[in-house]
Length: 255
Image 1 (tube, rainbow, N blue to C red):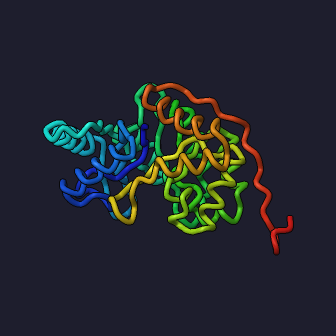
Image 2: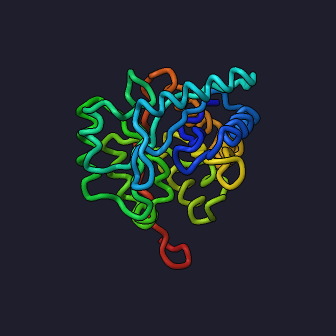
């Protein structure tokens, strides 16, 4: 399996804090069946700042450690980029890292409680530069939970999305789990990834998430999501089905 979102690099954000923790995460990833793991530390979110050169350096070091210890996992450089008005200039300065240089997939993080008024404009500017934005963990954005059409509007104009495995399996609560499944059913999810930060409270859970998706949404949906991560790794485009509106439930579950 390929996991396109993790915080495995040691000591640079809120993920692994030491090399030992990174190695523990690597071993856990291998047990999950993950062969390629994108290291996607926060680029800039008010607490951390990690530019292209520093991330590439840390990835080289960690891959060397994994080789020395015969841990069969390949780490690939990426970033989790908080949406802000400087994103485009950061791209033009060459300090951001797409998941693949050919199709230029970018992990884009929104604030947890809102959707910026300039979101559509930024995503449009990215598309003009041939970047493919992937909005990470929209199922945990409180404004989107209350108004799913906010995400629909972004997806229908070209954005992709990535839902977190822990959300699917219920580790963030029943409401977020239900919304994750609503998004999958509405064709508004294109990737499942771990967003793993450690091996305890924020682990991988990728295999279990895929199993639950297969049980609830069918084998085709499971392999669609799983294979999309492989397409990213190979620098290939993915098939994007037409998104559907989510009908918001009213009192007592009556529409």
